[in-house]
Structure formats: structure tokens, C-alpha cells
Length: 255
Ligand SMILES: [Zn+2]
Image 1 (tube, helix red, strand yellow):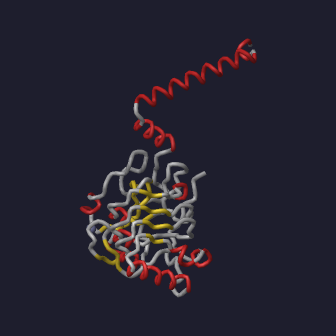
Image 2: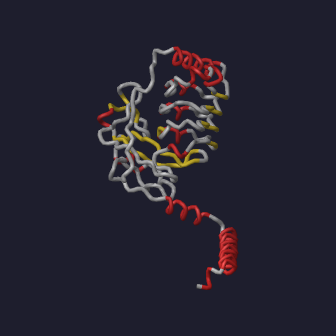
Image 3: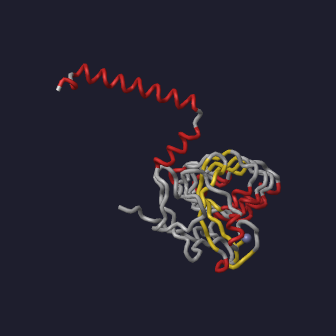
């Protein structure tokens, strides 16, 4: 049976709520005090933090933040302004099971080396290959009427951009990214995804063929040093011998 294709949900956040106002206030404080850690849960408390489904665009002001802690959040998306957080080194949204994708702009955080992401929840992950929603007609809306090209940063109305998915390495994980592109030239600027992921920017939907788990496993094996592979096949042989011995002992081979 084909897997159900999820839909993109826009307007995920009630921006009049106490939780949201407090979060915006926290962002201002972190920016002003030039703090290096951004941990909204500890400022809002767990109850209000559960009412946060995206982050304010003002996170772009957090130029000194090196670590984002979003453990156990209910977040559904991250705004593209995360790409302006130029000091970001560590990104931890672990167990945020509603975060199925990230904005392409996160690739602009050049110092980002460490991530802890629940990859099972991601579109196209190697474990269950969750289908990608269709991006025909640019269904993803961020805050505001215009959007920047994810590559050249030219500002455009949504109808003049093309939205694409691409899976790339972020920190220590391979994650699905949403890009808004102004032109074919900008599409060509995109890097090639790692092996065993769709190898080009695509629009998702029911016709998309994704590699399987076996392709991912082979790609991992190809990366292993030869010595390690030899060791594995050695143990495999031992395992075969052990099973043969068991069969002999149980009399299974006598028939
Ligand atoms: Zn562009």
C-alpha cells in the first residue's frame, strides 16, 4: 500500500498568545545580552513551551548564539532566518517529532557541526522513507508576503519562486531542506545530496521514487574501511559455522 503523503501546514502559530509574546521577549534579551545559548524551554517553562510551533523571525538577531536547545519541543517548522545565526555550532531539536523538514537557509550556518535530530520524523529519512509532500504551486508560506531566494537572496513574491526539496548533510545528520528558488541558475548552484538520497532537487509528491533502505546500507558499507569489512565477513563465516554445527547437532541434516 502506498504511504500516505503528508500535507504542509502553514500559519502554525497563534502570534497573540502569551507563550509567543514571552518567546519574542526572550529572543530580544538573548540578543541584547549577547548570550551564547538559546534555550526557550528554560525561559518559558514547559507548559508555555508546548504552545510554541515555530520560532520568531527575530532569531536572525542572535549573532552570538552558539547552541540552540529545542529538546522535546512541539515545533512544526523553523523560519529561514536561522541562516543568519552566524555563530551557531550546535543544533538540538531532539524528540521534536513534528519537525519533518528544515529551511534550506540553515546550510548558511557555516559553523554548524553538531546536530541531534530525531531522523525518523524527517521526510525521506533512510529508516522509513517518509514521503515528501508535493511542492507544486509553492505551498509553503513563511511569515510575510514575499520570500527570499534561498541561494541568491533576491526577494520575490511567492508566485515567482519555485519550491524544491533537497536532502543535505547538516551537522551530523542528513535532513530534508525546503528551498525557494528564483531561477534555473540558482537551482544549479545547489550541492549534490549524499548517496542513497534523491540525487537532485525535487518537488516530492506521489510520483517521486526514493532509494530504499538497502541502497542506504550499501552506501554505508562502501564508506567502511576494507579492514573492517574483512572483519565483518570473518565473523559472518564464524556465524555460518556455528549454525552448521547447530544443525548437525539437532540432526536436521540427517534427512
Ligand atoms: Zn536566486
